[in-house]
Every structure is written in structure tokens, then in C-alpha cells.
Length: 362
Image (cartoon, rainbow, N blue to C red; front, side):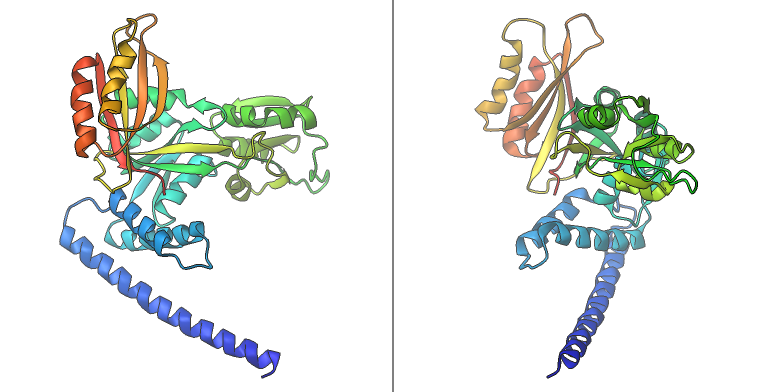
């Protein structure tokens, strides 16, 4: 068989597979609609169920597609099927083009209505007011640490954490392409806009390559890209989505100082997530300021075999040298050993708040 005939045969077989895929996707969509009718007015998005589906499919993946490709494909399938039941609105720190938007897309897929907000506070408020069903907010970065405003809002909000997103953050330097001056390299850049955390994550690269450029902190990387699009002497540090949104040229890629730079986001909702079998519970605790009090507070977790994955402290507003401790523990609050540990911790704490139990990031 000639090479051309062999290619024609392979392409015909691919076309046949595509037809079967379309038929199966349509069947899945009809089943999703049936599930929606059966649930009635119940919540459409079930984070624990979607996490279980993605884990099962990744575990069954025979290759050659990598695991992340399987997750991405089926996340979009579930997103499209979910939209047939009821459209979801997701708030995030805007404007368009931020890493928060990228995290929202990674978690929910493209078939949701995305609501950009001017601040993390507004993202929380949009859900509290019912303008959005969910909010995606940054909580910590692997190099720059916790996002303090998010931690503070977790104490005050009635919302619950129902999910988390871990996003590999790739920072790029971008600028407007000017027809007269070019603007394709670093020459002529006098100011660099970005969010404070992104500027910190790229501190050494900026020192080496743009030591004389003014660095201006703005509310988000999307806003930085918008400002850079208006000024040929400006550049922005942001993600690839921002460059696409605002028509900017990326003049330097992957400029973050740490190549494994990662940001963790929380998904906030009005309702709890159920157990998925691989979960995490987040807590806010305070204890009297005396020697050994924190150790005593944490002891029940060790006694009941509950793993502690994170411990973060923030000054409390109740008085000098008083602290709120933010904990992440392994397991869902309904798991028997977790429930027993929490029952022992609560009476010892001066502040005890379960921020949410939710599936670990897939």
C-alpha cells in the first residue's frame, strides 16, 4: 500500500472514531440532562462527584494521552454537560486575563459564566449576594506565601470552601507592539506593571534585565496587561491568557525566579462539599496565649491519626500577640477519625471555625 493510501486509510479510521465519540458524547449529555431532571432543584455542581469521576478516569487511563490531558478533556466534557442542566456563574479576581480566571477555567471548564471582580472582597461578596454561585480566590503561592486578604475574609464570611485549584504559574513579560517603534524586545520599557506577588516572584529577573524600569503594583495581572496595552513604553508581568486578551506580544517567557512557581486557589460556595474519598478540611483556630497551648490544641489530630498538611498563623484582631491559626488536615469533617479529633479540639479553642471540607485538587 502506498504512503498516500495508508494516510487515507488512517484518516478514514480517525473519522469513524470521531463519529463514535460524538455519538457517545451526545449520549452522555442526554444522561446528564436526565440527572438534572431527577435532581430537581438540587445543586447542579457536586465537587465531590466530579473529583471522583476525574480520579477514576485518570486511574483507568491506558495512554498514550498524559494524565493532565485526560483531566482537561473530561473536565470540559463535564462542564458542557453541566451547562445543559443549569448555567453556573463563577466570580474571580479580574479583570479578564488573570491567573484567577485561569484557575476558574481549570476547575470549572469553559462552559460557565465568568464574573470578573475588582477585588478578592468583591468575589466573596458576589457569592454572598447570590450574583454568582462560586468564587475562585488565591490563598497561597509556593514562593511568596499566604494571601493575607483571603485568610482574613475566610474568618468573616458565611461561605464554605468546596474545592481547591493548584495552578502552575508561568510569568511572562509582555508589551504592546507599536507599528512605528516596534516594541518587540526590552528596549524602551520604562515601567513594568503587575500584581505585587508577581513582581516579587520575578524580582531577580527584573533586577538583571530591567534594572531601571519603574515597577508599579496594580490590583491584578489582568489590569497590568490592560495598562500595558495603552502605553508603548510600558510592559506587564502576567500570564499567556492576559497577552491574548489584550493583544500584547510576549517578549520574555517564564521569567519567574522559581521554575516550580505554583499558586493555590480556593473555591468558595454557600454549601458544603460531600466526601469524595480523598479530601481535605480547612480550619481556623485560636488558643489562649500560654506555653504549650498550641501543642495541646493539635494533639488530638495526632492521637486520632489525622495528618496535618498546613499550619499558618495570622495576628488576631482581639489583642496584641494573639494569633489565628489556619490548618489544613487530611480527610473530610464527616470521616469518623476526623470528627472525633474535631470534637476534642473544639472545647479547647477560643476560636473554632470549620472553613470547609472538600476534594483535594485533582
